Image 1 (cartoon, rainbow, N blue to C red):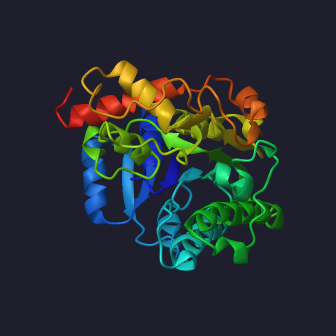
Image 2 (image 1 turned 30 degrees about the vertical axis):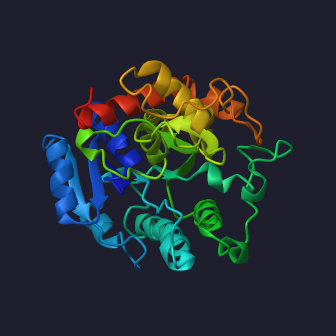
Amino acid sequence: MSVFISGATGFIAQHIVAQLLENDFKVIGSVRSQEKADKLLKQFNNNENLTLEIVKDISLPNAFHEVFAKYKGKIKYVLHTSSPFFFDSDDYEKDLLIPALNGTENILNAILDHAADTVERVVITSSEAAMIDITRYFDPTFFYDENSWNPTSHEEALINGVHAYTASKKFAEKYAWDFIEEHKNQIKFALTTVNPCNVFGPQQFDENVTSPMNTSCEIINKLVHSSVDTKVDRTTMGKFIDVRDVAKAHLLALQNDNLIGERLLLISSGFDEQSILDIINDDFPALKGKIRVGNPGTGALQNWKGSIHDNSKTRKLLRFEFLPLKKSVDDTVSQILRHEEKL
């Protein structure tokens, strides 16, 4: 039996695929083009346990039906990681809300129609965004945990890109939980959602280092390529989790019965540009004097002043320690410099 993973070329998804293969799972992944499939297969050394299928657009009706029909009776686990993550758009409905919701709807209906009797676990990559009130994220009186839901309405989601992205994660995840309840007598599988905050950490492969990088890692990449005159942006702040921890949580959600029906809030610590700069300046002598220093020791890592979260339930369920910001930043920067032959 196999694991199906949507969006296999994604930043998080590639780490999940790597960990699945390391644990001897047979993996079927969806990608958007043959070119992407060829590249990913080559990166994984044409591993015989990895098969890739083309799904050009997850938002189109019945997007996953052909794949699930092809592998009928062979898929035991499903990981749905594919969803847009960006803020710049001229059409929030088309670019963010519709793909996120339709992608989730399409994959769950494909399971219902073609694999209801074989799929046992479904894990959806949701987001901290589905749990927060984006208007109060930096409000120290705002509290959230695994039971919290983003209150953004459809109308409010169209205000700007940040509102649209956070709402898209809420709408898609809520659909999944409602689907489980509606079809509980027709399906075999149980659901878990993985809800990470900003995801840092190295790419699975050095050659995937680009400029710009994926949305979250670009925060670090931008600072690596900053100058001493660059001002520290005090608005670039939030909470972080390492991509390797996110991948590990997905695998545990497939295997551990105690994670069935849970929403896993993945947060390691707070961060801001100052916190990241402190780590880079301390740990990379080759960059010291070339990038901004700011005011060391005053960052969000030491002095978070925003919203309060409690993910103690998630930590207790997962039973592993999340990687600290220092490790995540060090490994990301090392990879960037290595790729650019500066290390």
